[in-house]
Image (cartoon, rainbow over all chains, first blue to last red; front, side, top):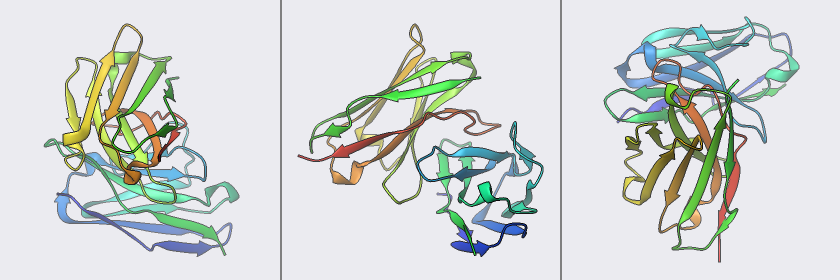
Length: 110
Length: 117
């Protein structure tokens, strides 16, 4: 079973600052199947990044993803007001395990 | 643009069966797998399972014994049934498109299902 851990649990930053969010697994996974989502209160999750580093359609360039193996990172280069939300990493297990999410990182306003 | 909309009862009694339907519009039904996710209030996201347009399924092992998913391609709909529900099944249930390469690009707005007598 793939377990995803995210850190930090909460990130308190100001608009304009850089946010760096981490997603780790205990065993190596294919970066092809690693995605990041943003969720705001009362809304469904929104796909930001797939394949570890490809921005989904309509996602601003300030969002970027990187990493491989067991360590993955979501970076928001300069936080805007609408970026304060919870961010989840997700892995797809192509051996029938389906989708697994990390516990999330909340980015809130300092 | 693919759009999804969940529908079904918002209140289910303990030990009964939760039934939800997701209606898909604006895209090809055969292009994706179709997933259900859930999120207990204030908690994280959990994948429930997915169904392909052919009817093949894959369920979360933790829920497998209680879950059934099906498709109705004539109506561009897919459905979730979860039996023997308890209060622990109270959650916002989301339907979403799924692809191996891109993940879950399109989501419904979600529907809150409360399990209570």
